[in-house]
Length: 457
Ligand code: PGA
Ligand code: ZN
Image (cartoon, rainbow, N blue to C red):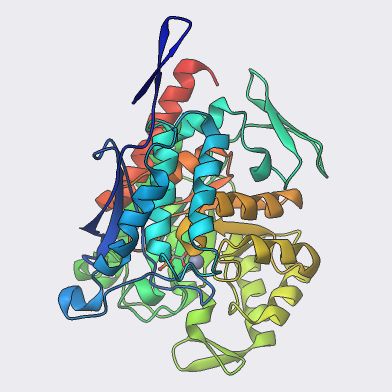
């Protein structure tokens, strides 16, 4: 705290006094980085993925015998320099101040994959700076600042919030008024791929609630489906099949995507809800994980050509109430992305995760290339919140939808709920309503909802 005397009034200025990095454990029991500012008054953690994109910011790890080669102490080697740069800097000034501080990280490491500082360290630092500037209320910081221009359609635009929750974008292409949304969770209740030990190649089978105004109604619906799914799996395959995967969804030993989708429809109906009206379905194929030599192994040991894969996914969309498919193709199979976009753009959300790796550069390219119409935002793929907001701006500029996402390796840090809610993201991908690190994000959704009700914004 810096005390400044101005016309006989003492003004308290919050400043950065110290920054410390601590090695903690993530939800898989591997080390990750926690950043602490001002003796731990502000804390933030970096998550860690398993099905990572090749263009992602890299994690710096020790690669020695401790923690199976995954300890992160080497990433702390720049702690002193970071302290020298940041100590004494003011935390007052809202989002503009945050951007200024975040830019200092980019000055230290301007490599595309954060190979100097490590994306695991820059993410924890960037998140923590956001918490420090907002005095631990990231949602309010966004809310008070009428959203960030750069997260609403690229540079030069502004977004103005009026009292009744209507936003208006100004000065950018496609300026429009729109109602502030409550982000709908994409709820991953059947896990496959790298997040589970079963034979499902497609990584995530998710349910998606319809738009809602009451957070408890929505949570009642998704948790009811989740619990009914457990009963159905137990009855059909035995209770040993109800163990959960990395993101909290069940991971029964099934192989075919249709079998998983039938289970979801059954659980939705058993819960008294209508598939395609009350509850929808989304997939994350994470297809880079089963792509080789121009073919996709959607079923174990059965390889489909690009055309067959496109046809197969289209057929799934006809048969089931699927509203979104993430990473349907390999991150470099741009040809299939384009073809699929041409046929499905007006029907479903085509979401780029490994495709974009939250990179403003790739999201900008998408404007011309038209690979996808929605962005999965994982801040640790790019390494700073500011760059993630730039990426969001490029997708929004063209009317695309935004999903704030967790990683399969998580901590109890709930900052992504704040960012998602704060920037008016349409969706949040925070796993199943199960496992502490996922529940932390759901419970933050409740807290913000209540805070919002009480202040009427
Ligand atoms: P990851 O998976 O965190 O293991 O990369 C999540 C996803 O692919 O969306
Ligand atoms: Zn994904």
